Image 1 (spheres, rainbow, N blue to C red):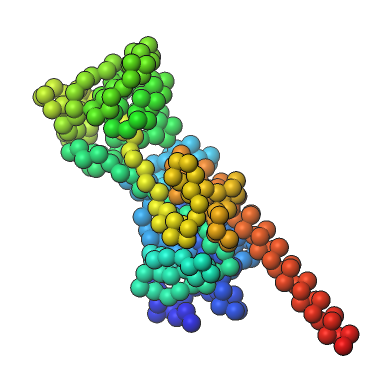
Image 2 (spheres, one colour):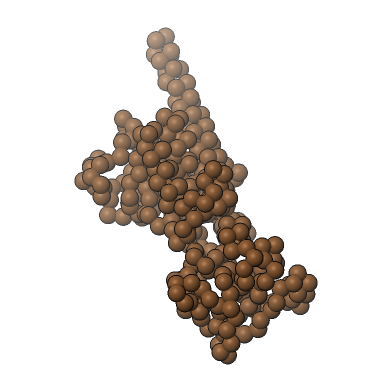
Length: 327
């Protein structure tokens, strides 16, 4: 039995009459909230569980989302939470310990929620290099996505730190926003072809290991190298190592693709019956608007799957009733 005292806010979520939720959504980012919105409008019994650790929390603004361009990530989530509440969907703050094969969702220090279907939208985390200043400036003037943030630092002196194989492409891409882009290989060893492409694109390559980010008056001023040289810059880009928060999915035994990410079909359906996934937990390239769309696609598929089950059950009940009447 789920009791109100099991939850931090004192109010227990409302399952169906049989104590089972139609859908338990794990993760209240763009993917999870958009899925919950559609499922709530479909009059499904839905609860959203969230640990409160959005990936884009360090960013003050998000861009490229039609009608929300320039708004804060926090504001988007606040609006989303208010919208799903209108349809009777509750959000419960808490961490999920594991999901069982029978779709029992077990919360850390809390109850077990029974679900007919589960959507995992737990996102990913960025692993940053151990360079002084990186964590302090992350999401401010140390950035990762040109499509998300380059326009705001256009025409300024920019740097790209070679901490990831994707850094070369990142630098080539950034040339469209600034004529002054410096590539710092750091620990990366660019190939001869990489160097040709960077130089042909008009980028300057500055050799040497990065020692720290130079910060003055709460702004990035440049990049200091271990040999003492400083490269003045107004903003820098860094490609982090992205790690999916997919422990709940891998714990279920969900199949992975050749790149080691949980594999799904176009709707987010995993290899485990009744389990879907959406957003950055399965696609590191998904922006906020993309993740929201993935949540929408998953919600449509989940509701259709539930409908098929409901209809099959109704047909069985009708046949049993007819058979009973004939006896």
